[in-house]
Image (cartoon, rainbow, N blue to C red; front, side, top):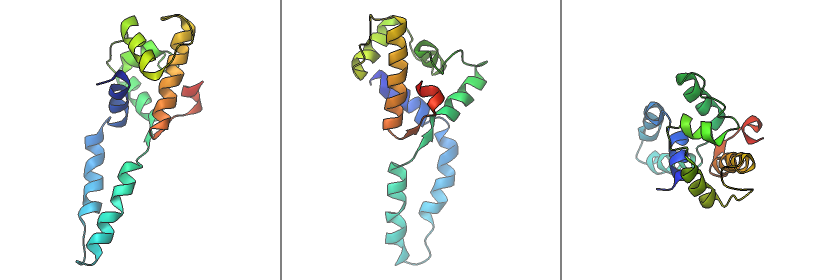
Length: 135
């Protein structure tokens, strides 16, 4: 599994078990056999269009970990917050996945560009990313 896919799964599925029970009763409620096809057709698009508030999820994770460092702008702190490898090797691999080559590997410029690319990619995949995490 790619590093970015792991990042996305950790953010998008944070506390997914708590959200699933509220969605299940709506999808299973049927009043008449004729209503079943319409009820079944409506939840599917909502599930594929589900948006996740990336800022809120990361903030909640940071609160559980004594602040989470400077995850708002540091790729190293973001990876640590998500309990992922933040080594130079892992960041090089992530940079290759996202095609981010702003400067020398491990440099401040590269790390800033990598953080921005991760946030943009989360937004591209349905995440709601506040401007404070994009800049």
